[in-house]
Length: 120
Image 1 (cartoon, rainbow, N blue to C red):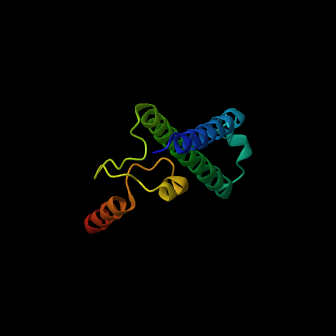
Image 2 (image 1 turned 90 degrees about the vertical axis):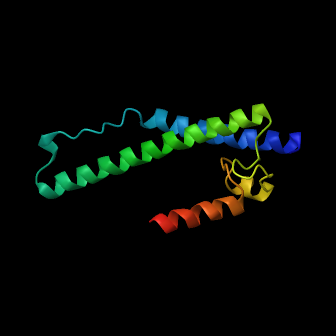
């Protein structure tokens, strides 16, 4: 992969990382607990529980994305970015533009998804 492309993807990944970290910093004071005094009835309790569940799932997903970003940035440093982890062929630039943290080329990802469907 060209240095120009690597620089572009590094910038994309770093920008996404900064966006997630800034979002988390802004929302870190968002309290996930709800005072019992604020819950007038069972519907309010159910809504509060749902909101808390969604918030926790979003935070978990953001943590996963940050790990993938760090792995992709490490691959850029190592010189292995853009190489499929399964077949070791080059991943197309268009795929990387759509999914900069991808680890698999299109055909290997499709094969993985077919295998997952077979076991589901």
